[in-house]
Length: 184
Image (cartoon, rainbow, N blue to C red; front, side, top):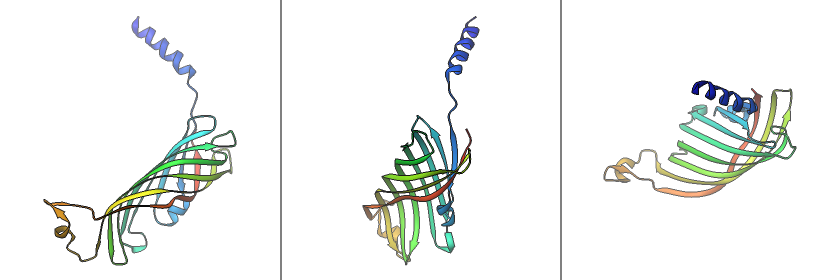
């Protein structure tokens, strides 16, 4: 009897649930920069969505570089319909990196928060083009040294390597053109 009541209660609650719109995307500009990205966006209201993008690269164009990052974001659409026309977003950024550039090595993490502005063009019922640009405050904490330095011994305390550079910058956080496919 209890199982029957539980099944009836669950069936009643499930009949009230509306289908959510889910979309997947990739940023073409990041892909061209040999930093593949993959994202998902979920409609959470009449004018808003939440999304999560992940990006990764390893030695693009033969450069010694490794980046792994995630970007959560909340978007508000002014058109009254999510994933359609102009929007403003607020998002975060968390990235781990190991980059060798002009004889210097930068190895650490970056965290940030920023704003994004953009416009979504609907090509078909399920395919959109999303143009966006944003900036934000990025804080970093990393090891910075010249290639060939004895960093392991020079910057260690009790066998633990420590960072020697930290700070923050106002930088672009999201600039791109994404292709979005709505799964529904």
